[in-house]
Length: 321
Length: 262
Ligand SMILES: Nc1ncnc2c1ncn2[C@@H]1O[C@H](COP(=O)(O)OP(=O)(O)OP(=O)(O)O)[C@@H](O)[C@H]1O
Ligand SMILES: [Mg+2]
View (cartoon, rainbow over the protein chains, first blue to last red):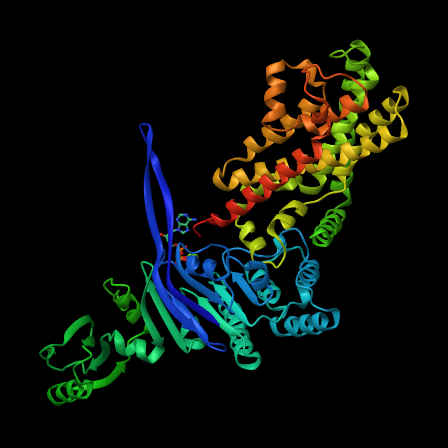
């Protein structure tokens, strides 16, 4: 469904005027990126700010042409056959709407029906279905500029799916949404993928989206693919410390962390210990329980956030401080 | 493409009609400004009976014809001069993901029937001048062709100027000078301007073909520059050249389009 082979995208930017000449700089947003996505997959596309996610998506949708390399989406070269491709894919930009600001939602949808040449019967059925699933009923008659962010996002999702595309590309679709709206959107996306077989590519900074939706994750950093695999693989590739939370009895002897174990934090009788991936948690638990009076003990698996921050090459933030 | 344009234009008209107050105000505003135009031109014509060696009727003929051409082109593709704004707002990206030419979407964006209102004064001037000139039926046919050809040429200029905005994001103002400036120049007889300027205009921006050269033929006048007879009929060639240049510039702009960084 998607194929990228050695794709780069460079932008030439001009710095401030220094005398007569302006400083010319080349920003490489995407660098020799190669991957494929098969039909029916649900792929999460992750990366820190400025990693090149949106740039990749713009190349996939034909908005930008690649500086080098081969891009194929649904067998087409997006930049050259943009209009043809548009009929087969749906695109949502979370940051801004693809709808017409001054048109009521239902007029936008009617216009989309004409632009995409969807026949009336199929359109009506599809719109009814999407309206039901996304709860659009109340604001179908409202101009887009009067919609709240969450309402607008549901409108944009509907607009992207009215023509039943084979591929849905989403750039931060859950940005700024509250918990309820997020849940609605996630549930909806999962359904589109499983029931209609739509291939989905999603970028997000919300790792909750990834954990709930994506069977496959791609992580990019500085325009390069840093990881490509399942969520479990991701956990294994960039193993992060597990955290052991120990509650000591009030009169217990002070705990000295065993060799190789780091004391992360202490709060009264409660201690947080970081256990490196190569150390068996069971042995640590056994040692502590044998020498100390322990009230409670709990082991936390590393969060995907820690793993991802590691991949981004930064020091992971201590989640307990 | 034409179908998509009408579809979008109709949708925008309906959207504007949802606010009858604003629509009415816009129509009134347009009527007032075009009437003022008309008053100015009447004063000019009545006080300067031989404007650049032409009679009032001949000057009116030139004015009416060029204004109709310009208004038609403005209605059809005038919104393309908002390209820069759409790029900055990100709405141009939204046009690019639709299965209809982005140029057509841009051209039809924000269409209002109000623009058609500007046809009235110019049509009035033309209709006033025609019976005062000694025109044969074939001249009338030529006049219609000249107006349409002029509209196509102006349309090409709009698109050409808009394409420049791809490179020059803040090019909105420059575009305006190019097209609106061009239109007000052809409203008055070319011989009013210096010969060098006219020559430059004839050969660089082929604005003179909009109505000056064909009108010389229709009005049976010699060319003050003494250009050969066949130049009177180069209008369609100029229009085709401008349109080809416009399509080329648009495609180039689109190929190098870089979107915005968010
Ligand atoms: N139109 C442009 N002109 C110049 N540079 C650009 C442009 N678009 C993107 N960039 C640069 O390319 C790099 C990648 O940007 P991109 O928008 O793809 O990042 P992203 O992964 O989507 O980030 P975010 O998470 O912040 O949305 C950045 O360094 C950005 O400054
Ligand atoms: Mg982005």
